[in-house]
Length: 353
Ligand SMILES: C[S@@+](CC[C@H](N)C(=O)[O-])C[C@H]1O[C@@H](n2cnc3c(N)ncnc32)[C@H](O)[C@@H]1O
Image 1 (cartoon, helix red, strand yellow):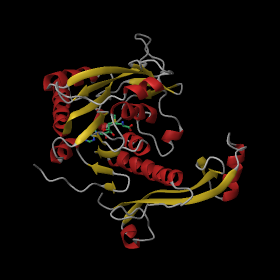
Image 2 (tube, helix red, strand yellow):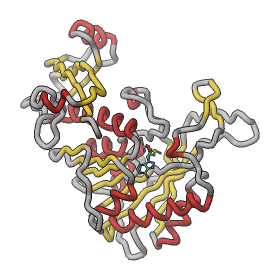
Image 3 (cartoon, protein in one colour):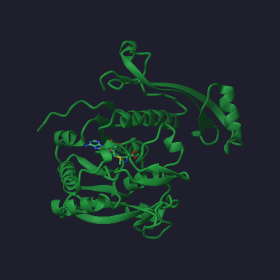
């Protein structure tokens, strides 16, 4: 078995490991039967010069080189290879969710049948406000499919039936999920062309895993499944090939770690951003920072409520006055504030990563 390279990001306290590289190489080096749940949002192979409509403007659908089609046969070969690699690392009762549009999902489904996965459901993720179809020769594309499958025919997969029923208002949850695309807030650290909404992945984790389970995402993108895992107390192992997406993931995770620490321990406030081997501070290791690239700098203010001891409002601001002004204009302005925390974050990527 090939040797697993060190993760490019590792937070042992919150059990998040992110590898920067090709998922086929990393998956081959992971131990067999070690993962509880996989969420995979692979290349859709739709970046071939088409156009779509975004915010009322005609824009290219090209998402990047990673999304370019290599032809039906090669695309299917790739899908079969990474799905087989995922199947090897899944625990016997583990399951996998794969999202896609018609460009890729039929190949994914067929590869799963060929590999002997047990198909459980195909979810239709309905987008309430889809972009109009500019050619007026098709229905407007308003759904994506997410296939849910267990490792093999013998698997006894996890399904948190009661919770799903409760979330569906006391009725059995349907396989049609209406969920808004990622909000501007979810994209505040930068845009990924294929970013999934947190709500979608959180529901997937809640449906088919337990707290403390290990979740793998071989195509991490902007890190949505790592964030969802952090918020839902699952452990996460993510893989992403592109540096620009990897940077975005780091920015989103570091910001969320601040939120989690404040929410969990606002009376004994502690930010565990300094523990080795993850050193995200510049103060403790200046020499490392000097040979690193600054990828993010921000000042944030967190308002902690006196009745609800949690962060009730947060905003980037240059000064306390500026933050207070924003707070007074927010929907939380009538809530009593117990204290305000200012954080200054600088994220450096070491040269060569
Ligand atoms: C559809 S996007 C995933 C988006 C993600 N779900 C999110 O919410 O941000 C697919 C991602 O897979 C990455 N990717 C493509 N091929 C890869 C490979 N062989 N190994 C690892 N990552 C890959 C791309 O760079 C891209 O960021």
